[in-house]
Length: 167
Length: 281
Image (cartoon, rainbow over all chains, first blue to last red; front, top):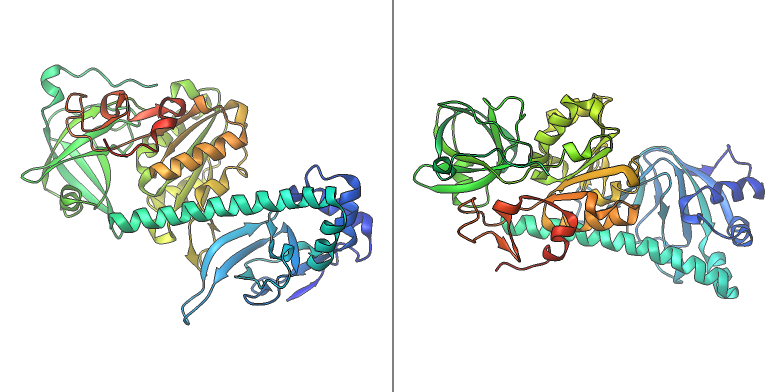
């Protein structure tokens, strides 16, 4: 269950901007670009044991995790969900919003109560296209995120393959 | 780098009898075998390896995984991947095996004194660094922070769980454990071991890192450490490939210009970074 964060009054742009500025994803972001993110942002709390988002739902949000633990899971065939990666306070979650009409490919399950800043993906994508400097900066940050996750996924695969080959 | 104690030439290729005292199942395919010498115990330094001989079957190069302060009880942790290691996995207490060694260069614990000591282990790679952890804790005041980063494929693939529990409760060492994947119910982190490197508190400018695991994991670890700002010369890896004679004469373990058994198994990152991608010769 996702609710607004009572610790941060909605509409308090300064408070939201400060929270975003303290997040590693936004480290070094220009003040006017922080303002763009804050303009499209909200703060939420996701209860432990509930979903941040579900596989197949429209991927329309960038999440900046402030506190808590979120498992990226894949479920299928009635088997117990497999946790592929756990994300924690300081991590960013979701880049599919950069491309319209993408669905989430995994479930994001809050293992503990999680505080996050959510940024509206449609509006953010519009802002990326409207301002080339902002768009380039944000695209590079998302690319770094994707690069890290790809690197982790490849190492996971190598671990799995080498182990299976030995067995 | 810690250098092996000098052995008499006659001892270099002669195995001594050891009696298996206990066999501890670590995972479904990994055991730790504790052995006691029939003669005098031989000291080793953390990171050195032995040639372990199952009579009638063959030898395998295995790093010591026990406390170097108690050489009278020597341990090796072994995954069953071939004929000899499968035979080792099937040993029972009371069996006699042959061991020759120790061989090679160990971990550079003396060089790490006064610095943050960071240990990164993947899977069974925790075994060769375990003696270094025990030695560092025995002389804790000589180091600044000590951090242990452990990764495994899944919770069931974690080795030395009792140690991890004990060390997690020990405020002298900062332990972080992650697994590549898990099912719900696992309360720890999920992700490859390199995901821990940006998060764990240590001073990259004053850190010495020991890393052991699959070669690909060590390569990714080296890259993540470089990104964190650690001097590559302060990153050490241990390499084990095809060791046969263990004394640098047969050439089976040659990797480019180095013989892993004689020049290693512990190397500074710059010595081997370009060799990690090398295929077998």
